[in-house]
Image 1: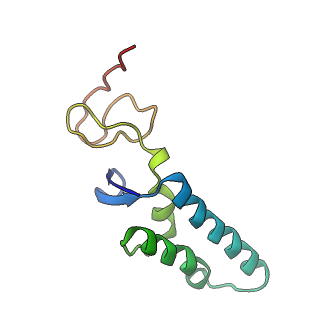
Image 2: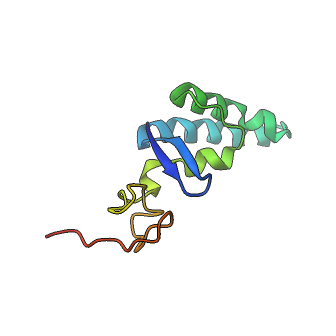
Image 3: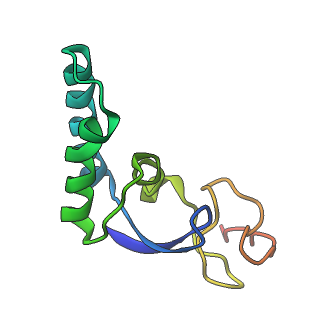
Amino acid sequence: MKVLWCWRCRMDLPMLDEEEFARIHLLLQRKQLRNEAGISSLKHAFAPALREYERLTGFRETNINAVLHHRLILFGPPCTACGKPLRTPQARYCAACGASRQPVPS
């Protein structure tokens, strides 16, 4: 887990590494099985994944979609101008300050 600026939420938030995200994903797969068995409340279905996110990060999140986009691999390197992460690994400019991405030296 690493705290980074989230361009969607416009604040610093804990981002999951791939091992942590796999734990959340596993709980969501179990949720799908429970839904097929008849549990219809999304609040109850997503609760285990939201609890695991809070346990891993110390941050209480109520929106499962936010948890799914707070994943380190989805963000790019830090901006050379402002230091906030680029929106994606392929981003050509910084969404936070508008600076162009500097080419990586060979």
